[in-house]
Length: 87
Image (cartoon, rainbow, N blue to C red; front, top):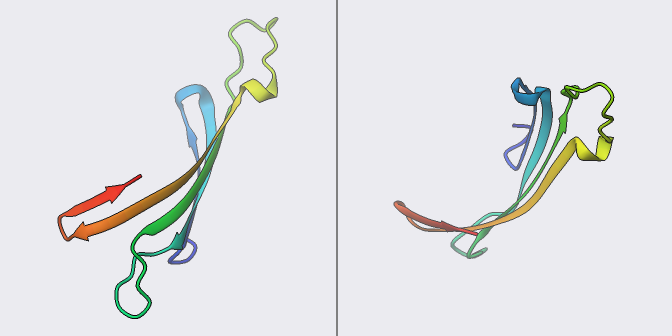
């Protein structure tokens, strides 16, 4: 956790020797009272690079085929202490 709104991470998975990183930012938070806002909005982004060498050295795998990425906007609402919804 970098701040109370920003979280970042980096890691390596032994499966396919994948390196990955992510960033999550709480853009808006659900609030009640004078500054009421009905939902929370969080932005999430991650990327990964597969560093595993091909089994056949004659096969060349392009860099663009070894990367993956995700972008998400998470919208949620806490209805009660026991019930929340998220899109």
